[in-house]
Amino acid sequence: MIELRQIEHAFTLGRKGNERRVPVLRGIDLTIRQGEIVTLIGRSGSGKSTLLHIASGFIRPTNGRVTIAGQDVTDYGEGQWADFRRRYLGFVFQNFQLIPSMTAFENTELPLVLQGVPAENRRKQTTELLEKLGIAAYADHYPSELSGGQQQRVGIARSLILNPPVLLADEPTGSLDSENEEQLLQLLQSLNREHGITLLIITHDDKVASIGNRTMRIEDGQLVSPAGTPNEYRKLEVVKP
Ligand code: ADP
Ligand code: MG
Image (cartoon, rainbow, N blue to C red; front, side, top):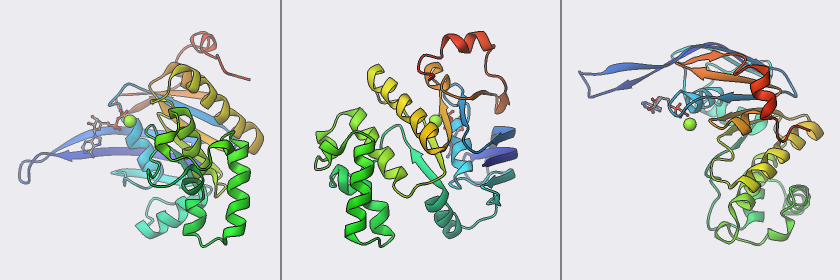
């Protein structure tokens, strides 16, 4: 479903005439099969977000190829990437990125509005999804009237409304307390189990990493697999079904 081949990336820093290149990713190879949960763990600054931005077309890698759902998207232009993302990718962010002036319902249905889906169909799909995620009771609440866990669910509802086959999550529990973290991890696992959604989750948190069918560690811009010894990880499998 996702294939990263020999991904290298360097950022350019410094003033013009005095630039230096800082390598962040040094040859990442990662294949994620349909229906897998892969977690990628690494320290802050290890290049996790950069890798996710490359897998979603927000950053062009210095080298390497990106193939998603059988399509080599490496050389897609911005418009092509935008279309591709709409069809194939959902995103979960640490800071939710909800629109403060819109209710939970309006935030969730927004991608359908942008697609020109008629109001009647939007209402039906959005209501169903909010029910499935256990937040139908908060449909009319604004983000400021929701807890962190509820806001994250709304963010996930919005990212699922177009039924993407792949969900990419960057520190999805980073802003949640431990109870909400546990619930969110269970939700992600049930989306995978019940809908076969392929998940790539990046995190610096062992507990989040433990929900992966496979866990890789990123160190010095390279992947180390497996991330720990099996025993180390078994201890952490708190929420595994
Ligand atoms: P992580 O998500 O693992 O914390 P990032 O991928 O955000 O790490 O960053 C990896 C490294 O690349 C860091 O050293 C960071 O400072 C650097 N970096 C990230 N984005 C940029 C950018 N736009 N320009 C220059 N350097 C960047
Ligand atoms: Mg990051």
